[in-house]
Structures are given as C-alpha cells and as structure tokens.
Image 1 (cartoon, rainbow, N blue to C red):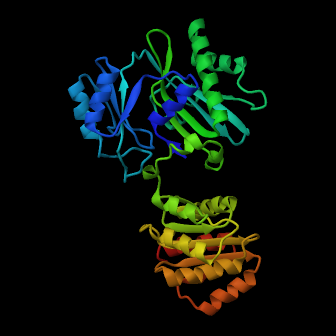
Image 2 (image 1 turned 60 degrees about the vertical axis):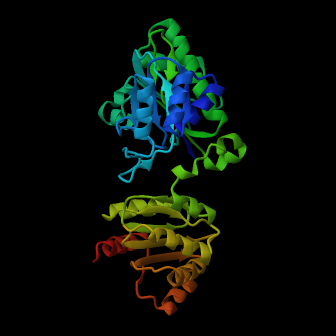
Image 3 (image 1 turned 90 degrees about the vertical axis):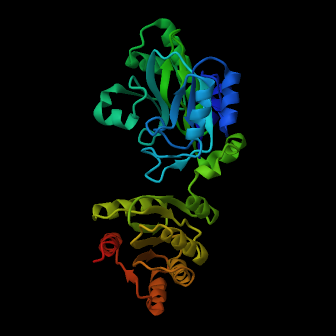
Length: 390
C-alpha cells in the first residue's frame, strides 16, 4: 500500500524526522488559507498523487505570493498529471500540499528498501538529490552508496559513518545530524513493516540541518493488520480499480502494458511465465496469480478482469496443479466463456493434479478459441504467435 507525501510526513513527524511545515488542501481557497496560516513569503504547491516525478510533470510549483498560491492550486487541482511512473494515462490530482519554502544549500537522496538477495534492508544514499535514482544508477552507479543493515543488530554508528563518509559530509556537526536522521528513518522502516521509503530530495539548509523535502512510502499489504493507523491512510481513488476488484476475489492482479494476458497459480510460476513470454518475443499484459483456492467463479472473474484491458490479444493460462486442481481451472474456463465474451485465443497449459480430467473437460466442451499447450515453452510460444495473429 502506498500513501501520499503529506501522509508520509505525518509519519516522519512521529519519529522526529525533520520536514518543512505544510498543510494539505482539497480546494484553492483552502490552499490560500493554509499558506496564510504557515506564514512566510514563499510557498510550494505540490500535487498529491501516488507517483514520483511530479515536479517534471508540472505538479510542483513555487509561489511567491498568497494570490499565486491560489492560482497555482487552481491549475493543479483537477489536472491529469502524467509522470514517468503514472504511465500515459496519468493520475487525477484531487489534493495539493502547501508547504513553506526552504533554504536549500544542497540536495541529497536517501532511501530504505529491502534487498532480497542480501535478505536485509539496505539504506541507499546519493549526492544526486532531485535526480531520478534509476537514472543515477544507470549513468553514475558509483554515486549511490548502499549500506545493508542486519536486523539482528539494527542501525549502528558504523552504518552512519559509512553513509556520511560516502556522501562526503565532513563537518562533524552535520555528520551527527545526518546519522541521527538516517537512524530515525531506519527505525520507522522497521517498526511499520515498510517496503520502501524514499526522500528525494533530502536537503541541507544554510544552518546545516537536514530536511525531508519529499517523502514516498510503501507498506507491506500483508502486515497492515498490525498497523490500523497506516491502513486508515489508504486512498482508494489512487489505486487501480481492477486490482482492488481482483483482491476481493482472492486474486493477486497487477496490470502491465503488454498484449498477452496471464493467468497462473503461484507467484513464482507467474514470474517465470512472464519471463518466458518476454523471451519468446511477447509482452505480458498483467500479473495474475489465482492462488491455491481457485474455483470456477474466481477463474471466471480473472478472465473478466483480464479482458477489460483492450490491449489483450491472447490469454495464456498456465496452471501447475498442486493445491489447486486442474479440473477446477478447466471448469472456470468454461464458466468464463458463458459469463464473458472471450473474444481472444486462450492458450491453456494444465499439469499436475487432475490434469487428465481437465484436458477431457476442455476437449468435450469443444471451445473453438481454446488452444492446448504441452508445457511452459510451448504455451508461451503459442500465446506470442496468437497475439501476433499467426
């Protein structure tokens, strides 16, 4: 689950992570009142959506008067903001964050993510604040400092020293402030089951203080039961409607940009299926894991959700029957053809528990656009060919 910048900064405040003062607004009039309450003579009007790159997309503007705050808020509220993370369809801006101006001397990058290879959180820092970290990693990887923290010992002084030395922070007072900042961020990450925290930019002010000028956070959905206060921050309007609908049926679904719909059981097999489709020259349109409790209803719902995507030109059903029986999937495919207009070729590979029974069910149904596959490679190749109209 992701949250907005203003919500991330509310959590920062609980942990003593310094940020500029700001107030969220839903209307231009409210934005003007917020600016007046904050005081000062420079404010930043920030679009609140679940995506990065807002500044480059025109969603972050500097205002030098109260009237300009209102004008900019009017422009940003209601706009469809397109960034590299939203895709070409963009996101509707329904909130803006009015933040006081800051005395920026330097911009850094600081984040905490899980390194699955190391099986521990990694703190990433860079002197290239304000830049897209993906671009920095590609063009100047040596400018990213990565410090893994073993949860068994937690964040220690030597972790902090590795960060400040890597960033070239030489002033002892500034080193102490930065290490304290990073320590609080790590504690926040661990105590709230976060998956990712990113501050870009983290600024240094003229007085040598460090402030989180931005804040991006994602949390482990499976752990939200332990954090009802964070779950209350969920903004349904920012989430994909199809992904939410799939979740209600116990399906794990993520929309992608390709042409081949995927229906698979098990996240690992789903990833392998998508990789194989790519290897065969195709592009997956989604990740869809039907899980171990799939039945005819959930499979039919999976087809319905996949086929909502107009880009889908073929569907690859790849099931290895263990917990979920292949005959259930076969019956689900039949149900789908009754409930939904399955107008694209469906390539089916069923193996494992009750695979022979499933093959018989599909054979007897005599559905014209269902194509049998013998294994993963055969199914992926047939799905790519079908998507190309071959």
